[in-house]
Length: 320
Image (cartoon, rainbow, N blue to C red; front, side, top):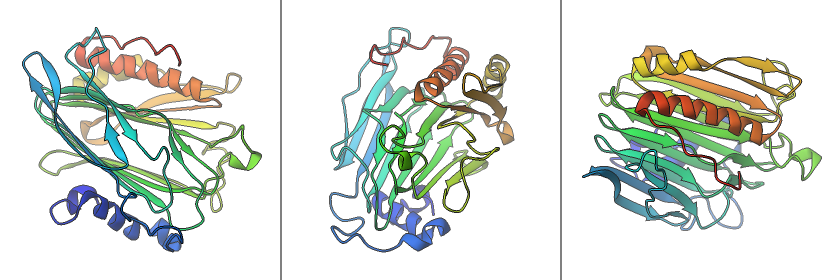
């Protein structure tokens, strides 16, 4: 079940609960936490961000939230795109716990341009009961432009996490949506590296009329399917997965700029391929360290923004 399907009759966090109940890979983890029931008050975060074009810039015209989600006010720090609103998503809990049901909605009206990110890595804590669910519904109207580039996903040992992203995008809009998935706290304890019990990460895109564009689902279940093998992660520890949904001419220009390489000496592999239905591109990068994946994602972000808007990306923050 998708959040968009449940929206007319279910609250967003209830739709996240229904998604977890329907996911076959989580059938064995339906026990309730002894501390606080799944989906209880304080464990049902919701954030809706609505961006609109007003005069010469994009504003945050709609904000609806339920703790532990919060949002910083819209900022305009990028001199290359002074009309683009930057917004940091914040969670007061500081981490994701068993039984959490989280829902994020990002809506861009015609011509709106926004960059959405998070205040820090999304840390998925260890779990001994149930699991955590995150649903993300993203909608872009004609001519809208979105960069959704959250900080890395950091699953702890014995974490169980389900993420489901549905993107509804008009043919003239552009969306760059990425995620970086770390192996875990590999410098903390040897068992933390790929020590999560189960990660299920899905993304799907459709047109406003419901026409499907593509879907992708990654299920990381180390107990059933070893991660340290050729064709999966091999010797790499970090995965970067970035989807570019854009008009065909934009996507083709970006594709022409993006190379592909496997460099085992440096511990980096990357490349892009075309999505079906002329939806755009998907770019993947593997590396031993997060900084290496960040660098490759920045290169892809650079090409995507320059070809879609004619503007350069801002320099990295000094702490990066």
